[in-house]
View: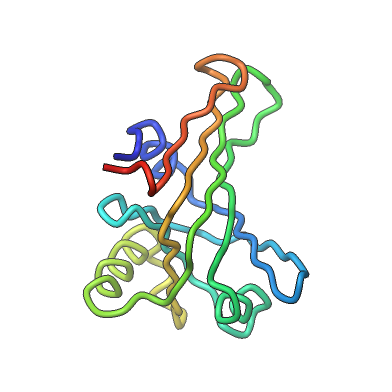
Length: 143
């Protein structure tokens, strides 16, 4: 089970950085996201003709971050994650689209090509719990 502090952090924030790789060349992009707790997944939209969109199709393994921007060391918090990205299908598409449009209603005005990162590893750093304190979730150890 994912720690409730991780869930709360994902829900409070709305921009992720996602890293892709193709031909031994790394790339990062920022996207608005919504967290689906029941699926332990992140939903975002991007065109498939963007560099990261093309690279999802070549290599679905991704990594990324969601961070709190602060200059105060004792308040540093952030998440690093790994997962597999795909376009949602069937019922997951309905759930993902509904959640995304609820969080970002303006997206109804654009052609939203949704992507879902099924999370396989999450590491949250939360210095409020002690300097460098890490909360780890891994799909190999999940209940």
